[in-house]
Amino acid sequence: MLPPPAPALARREGTAGEALDEGWRGGLLVPAVQKVREAAARMSCSNNLKQIALAAANYESTVGNLPPGGLVSPNSVNVNPGYVSAPPYAGPYTGVLAFLLPYVEQDNVYKQLDPGLFKFDTTTGAWAYNTAPFDFNSGAPMINGTGYPKICDARIKTYVCPSDNPENTVSSGVIDAYFVISNSIWIDSNSSND
Image 1 (cartoon, rainbow, N blue to C red):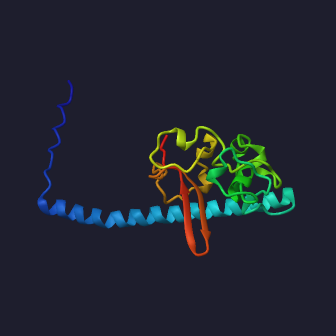
Image 2 (image 1 turned 180 degrees about the vertical axis):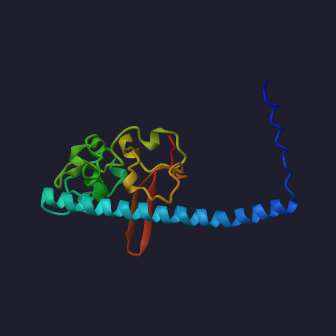
Image 3 (image 1 turned 120 degrees about the vertical axis):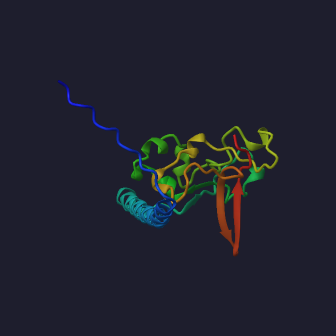
């Protein structure tokens, strides 16, 4: 003979007071979770900065000097010279982080960039202004002559702030230059979102 079936467990309804108590506890939990996330982001940021510093040290060991903060060649020639500075400041404007790509395990991205962007006496023009299609061909309402290699859209995790939302994009397009000159900030962005 089989034993009798177990009685069904009665479902207990919570009271309003218990719901308030749980809500209060949840209210304490949210700031704690935010603090843990902020601490993790700070640790990740610190690790990214250490990786960049180590990459710079490895670059120096390999090449014999630290990478330039920005590369400008007096020989640069641009396909649309009206959109960039005149020689000797015509480009290629290659920044330090591009030089460090092979040293932060991004050799695949580095190899897709024009090698002329990394030569000191290059004739290669400004990296963000010499690759079709250009924004003036896109029908964008605001143009600045931008045309850059699409590999430059690659997200390099080491270079991204861990507190930023990686899904967010620049609302006015790609920021291709950021300068501080004579106490003024100049941001150059491509307004097309293609």
